[in-house]
Amino acid sequence: MDETRLVERLAAIGWKGDASVELGPGDDAAVLIGGLVVSTDMTVEGVHFSFEWIAPAEAGFRAAAAALSDMAAMGAAPEALLVSLALPAEDPALGEELQRGVRAAGDRTAAPIVGGDVSRSPGPVVIDVVAVGRVAHDVVKRGGARPGHDLWVSGALGGAAAAVAAWSRGERPEPEARARFVRPPDRARLGTALAAQGLATSMIDISDGLLADARRLASASEAGIRVLEHRVPVDETAGGDLNHALEGGEDYELMFTAHPGAKSDILALGRELSVQLTRIGSVGEEAGVLLEDAEGRRRVPGRGGFDHFTVPSGDPP
Amino acid sequence: MDETRLVERLAAIGWKGDASVELGPGDDAAVLIGGLVVSTDMTVEGVHFSFEWIAPAEAGFRAAAAALSDMAAMGAAPEALLVSLALPAEDPALGEELQRGVRAAGDRTAAPIVGGDVSRSPGPVVIDVVAVGRVAHDVVKRGGARPGHDLWVSGALGGAAAAVAAWSRGERPEPEARARFVRPPDRARLGTALAAQGLATSMIDISDGLLADARRLASASEAGIRVLEHRVPVDETAGGDLNHALEGGEDYELMFTAHPGAKSDILALGRELSVQLTRIGSVGEEAGVLLEDAEGRRRVPGRGGFDHFTVPSGDPP
Image (cartoon, rainbow over the protein chains, first blue to last red):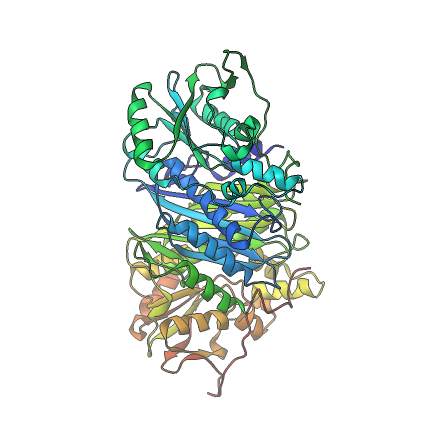
């Protein structure tokens, strides 16, 4: 069973259309009555990172940044974090370093840690970060992409994947690529502005790779996504490797769709926030994701992207 | 470093009195602006339970019941759950059984699973359950106990600890004791009623043992707690062992304080909800927890109760 299928089955068990909330599973976060947005994000040592790669405070920072990225993808302003830690019995103080990293990431968006839990772990360190945010307006869901809309992405992609690839080869990554991995960008202001100004018709954060997350957007919207691969902004730390940008994951940038008429407002917002925003494709009728090159040749990409239960390569030692 | 000290240090790192929420760490749950109550509860295989003891659905049920117990202890009505699971790569379908158990516990209080996360685990199964609830009134905090108040407890204690003790000896527990461990009580209606009727001056759920949690109540209230040990309701499945009731933990009953004048209303509420409510002591001036026997002899109890980082005994295999 692959991860996508497992997540669908878990969602079907947990959620039966119960009307006590505004939005159940299947998006970047759930939305409760009153516009409260909640998500939970689990980071496991030896799966998402290794202490041979990064320091505890960096691991905490990444875990929190990943959780906060889900808030941005809904257009929600982060309000608070909660942190559960499973720690080795011989080194509970490790938890303090992890917590400092979580707090540092929360400080970027004024989201303090308001609660948590701690347990001994007989195995790997586990960090579960809960992010809570709020929307004053409608949330931006994954399912709003319609044929004719443009596809946009923030920032540049592939730097974190280049770092993971270097570590997996037993090498030290370039400092800039390493920095992409340990300090994911804060897109809270961008996400909330896109939502508040009504510029994004659908939105998702790129956690498992551009193509994998584009498939989710396409599936939720019952539409097709065409990615112009020559337009994809490849991070300069990715060594020009387009695959890192397309399939690497860990970018925590925002991908969104918008009406073509919103282009100038979107570019203005990017200038205002000093965030690179790039139009990388469009939404079509045909289901799924298509890659198109500069000569207009189209192909269906392989099913890359990070999957916890089917892709053993690229894992930490 | 013991668990209490570690939790205090983590709270101090994460929380600097930030005013964006109503109540930060240090109670059973955090309270956000608008009366939204959130807590997170991590359950680790080999620490909190063993699959040699209980089935996956039972582990999921327990994990969710523990998280929901924190809502009850605040007087909050549960509204939704989120679940993060770390699962062995060779058996991701185990997650479906865990999820069914979580959903069954949520169904007791109409709290569906609205989101979550899933990861491969190279070690133990980890279940993190986030509970979200809401209060229409003030929450009941740990810090409201004042000298002269009565101390109350719901249900009968020690059954779950008797089951754990049997497993730890390599024996099979009595079916009734086992049931206490796998199906913690649902005290949501009791907690919300105590809060709504203004009957409880302070409240906590008993997760780490009556005495350990009484110390937390005393500390938060800057008062003393006197427990009349002959009044403590020992569960009939605990084999008459008072220590299981005082130090065992895993009961997930509510302990609360109340004005003496509230006694008849509290007893009436217990009859209405068919929950045994027992007055087991009182609040005094002197800090800490005192045990008093039927002859009025007082002693300071040892520091029992479950501590992840200092008590290796009683752990699952």
